Image 1 (cartoon, rainbow, N blue to C red):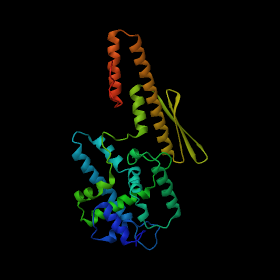
Image 2 (image 1 turned 90 degrees about the vertical axis):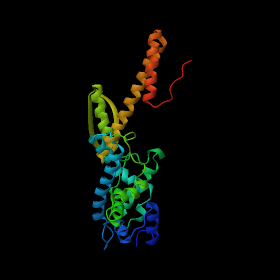
Image 3 (image 1 turned 120 degrees about the horizontal axis):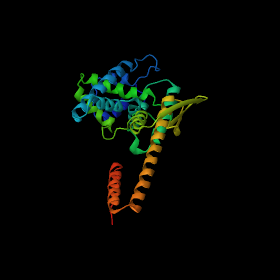
Length: 290
């Protein structure tokens, strides 16, 4: 039996996927954690599902992005099958309730992460390939998605096209080149390099909490805290990027205000062009001049 009523659980998952299993024992295996005694765990299926999902998303990205190079395609693939992204898929479709397990620590970890995800803004759920704000995504949630994918893949006789057709619905939204959230640490380094700024990241611990500080040209620009050092670093980078963006906007407003108020007619035309470019960059409604 599965974690929630055996046959009922199978029917719910089949309805979610729009796929009827020929071998329901594969689904039972896919939903069995190693902490559940005397039953085969999902580890072998998770191994297959990891590779199958990677290949399926690779094929999709290759066909739908004919102009992208291998570097950008690799980044897109990583974003779509990251632990953070797949864990949110599991939370969104409440897949953990079907998992056979015997671990209170695991339950608590998933409970904490689920509560944080449910507090995210609706438009952000599913768009966070690099993890949540304070708690690292539990690998078990991503494992469930991968093991279910493997169960489908094996059950349909390794038909990659059918696997993608079945799984794509629950993986939505698919992260595209247009909306991919760049890795904030990489983005920050690239921005500072482009602008000729120096960057220094310092870490210190208070108890079990990592505290990361980001200094740009010697000025404190970002702070992040978490028990997970990697997440503290992500939060600090996001904080620094937001503050740099705010400074950029403030500088632009001052420049435009000065040009529009004190400049010649030719300079005012230039300020309008800058304002138009600025609004276009921010995807704002274009200004109307009277």
